[in-house]
Length: 478
Image 1 (tube, rainbow, N blue to C red):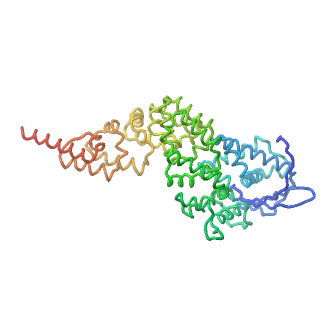
Image 2: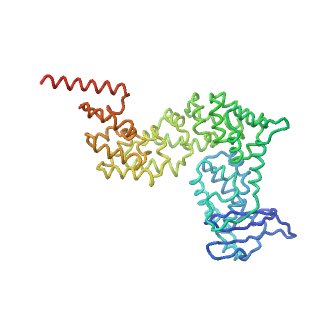
Image 3: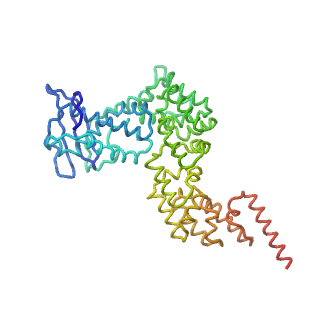
């Protein structure tokens, strides 16, 4: 059974079904005997809102909250967040923790009605799949969803809206927006806002940040925001790009420079991330600096295991730092195994197009493979095409591969030409492929597919004229 915890102040949780995800309201009540009344309602089952209630010991509710916190903490760390970032997130997630507990009570309501407690394992098995579904839906902004939770993060399916008092979070948002919007006695915005406007933001962007992350409105300008901005400026990041970085990830201003940001950058530089490219790296993926060293090292170890050299790993992290956000065991390794099963060079794929490893095997990779197999190519030929042009699998079937394939069939090339030059699928059909091939046909010359597409416009004209001259010379000598 679940370990016991000390009692906490009581809360009244009211649950309403909404497609399996429950919004809730919480009102403090006072009783001589501190109890919690848990009411459940299922709109789809015909049960009314006055379903039988049961008194739950405060110690049990406290224990469930502690279990939910522990599970959420481990889940965040599994996504690569550092201990410091995970702890800060948990400290700001009281409403979300209450939501997780309310979900437990709804899913296992029959257990509570007969007086049976949930075990730690049962709680974990109930919450982990739900957290994974939220991660799949929200991706890298899950941390914001957890910290800024006010109601169900997914669309409700309840046929009629349920009125509830303004949540604590909504109140925080309103106060935060008011703090950055309110003019002072001399008719000026707060120093924080003036500083951000000078940096390149407008008022609506600043309001947007505070709505998503209310704590930002209370960050010290001198102790947090200015030092972070100046640090980024020293790295060579333009002011306009710093604005974008802060809009994407305002939490960076709350992370210690000396304890987190600088050590993380030094760690990444030791792994081969180019120092001169930090401006681009942070602009592309500011969340990189919030990940733990263990998460980064796990990704680096995987890349090394796949055959990438330390220098190549550094270049991959520089060009596509987002790869750190991919789970090694749930995303990178299964994708590598899939390409290995085709016979593709995984190290080459990872180096040339690491974005491919963020795609779904079932929804993206397998359909592309099947497309080429149906066109008569062998598995080995498909693997060769992927190795020669790693971005091949990132293209849409309907929007890219199919129309370009159909046009290719009208061209005077054999199928093996695409095995030699799969980069064909990377060029614009209307702006590059069709007009250049039309020019080749009109001039009556023959060029390899790569000659038609790779060279610049000027070199293409020169090449066509040279071929025409050669053809006319042969015809004249006959």
